[in-house]
Structure formats: C-alpha cells, structure tokens
Length: 309
Image (tube, rainbow, N blue to C red):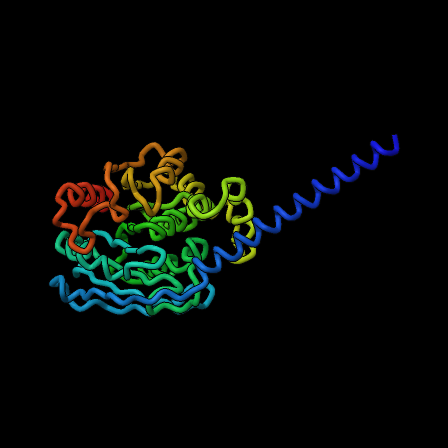
C-alpha cells in the first residue's frame, strides 16, 4: 500500500514538473518571438512622393497621441472635401506613402486623405510595433485633428488599412465613434492567431497548439491593454450600424484567409465583402497604382461614395 502511494506521488510530481516546464517553454517562446517581431523601429528604404502622382504638396501634420508620442501624418484635400480617408499600412512595409495612388483617386473624386505613420513607424515617435493594441491612440489623434478643423466639419471619416493597418482600423472603430466607416484589406483576426500560424511552420504541433493564451498574457504585460478585447475579431462587434468593406484573397500567404473567416463570424449584417481566389496580400497587384484594377476601384469608390452621401 505504501509503495502505491509512493508511486502515485512520484507520478503527480512528475506531471507537475512537466507542466511547469511546458508553461516555461511556452512563455519563453511567446516572449522571444514577440520581441523579435515587434521590438524594433520601422524605417523605410522606399518612399513615394505625392508629386509623382500629380497631387498638390501635402500638408505635414505634427500630432500628439494621448500618451504623449509625437506622430507624423500627411494630408491632401480638395477645398471642400466630401469625406476624408485615414490611410494605414502594414506591420513593417511598405511605407504609408504607398497610398498616394489611392489619394490621387480620392482627390479627383472630392475626398481628402490623411496618411498616418503610426507609432514606431517612419517619422513618428516610438521604438516598437504595437500590433494594433496602442495605435488606436494614433488614429484618435487624427480624428481629434479633423474634428477641430472647420474644413472637415460634418465630413464622414473613413479608416482604411492594409494588413496590420486594417486591424488598427477595426480596433479604432470600436473605441472611436468619430470613425464612420472601415475599409479593411487583409486584416489579421488577432495577434495570437497570427502568432500561432507563424509558429506552426517553425515548431512542433504540441507547442503551437497551446501558444495563444501565452501570447495574450505576454501582450497584456507588454502593452497594458486587454488583449482579449482589443483585437479585430472582437472589436468588429462594436461597429453597430456603421458600414465596413472587408477584402481578402483566399490564398494569401501572409495573413491566411482563415483570419477573414474568423472576423466574418462576428461581422455585422451590413458588412460588405470582396474576395479573390489568388495570393495577393494587398488584394491588387499594383497597390501604388490602384486605377489599373478597375473592378477593385469601382467597389472601393462605390463604398466610399455611399458613406460620403
């Protein structure tokens, strides 16, 4: 009998040790990988110029986020804009100046554009990428600026993003009622979903299968926000009746189509979608020259036109 109790204690202790080792390994992976992915300042080797797209010289906006970070944005607007589009780019490339081709299309249609370098990117302050958790403050700084400007009084504000920028747009709309509509291109559903997908090609299945909660706890400690709430797959529930256009390609090798499917499960009934069966993370081959793709442009401009009224 005594021997059975001894064996039982040994088994329990072994299991506890194994569980502790597993937790330590999971946390270590989460911390090290998020550090390598996110703890760096993003600079760009390629910058596009507004003048190259026959746009007037943009106004450079120097904004301050609510936590004190200095931000840089670039604005182009007709005299009396019918709407303004806040443009947001991806996690580390390209520069937000890749939107000047879109801004030209918007300008010709009577819409203003604000191209925002979010924190940790380009000329804005910050020494790390915040994965959509804190960049909502940056978007808020832009909408505060627009609200304070008589030029944009009563004008609809649309947040448009690609990749991480799309996630920022959705997260921002959940906490910022000044945003009237969203255009999301290839958004991730959450950081932990992207992390797990990345790790699935790098580590054994038992390690990646349970990694998500450890990424969430790491994010909580790193950014001081609620990672269970501040993520596109959850934030989209807060849109209410506001319009959203979601675009994604089925074979996207950067942000899988599964992210789109997860977001759509929580999307409001008025959500519009555009899907293509190709591998184009930016949805179109020539993002810097969008007017080459007339189908894309028609869908985008029709959506914006309905929002602008």
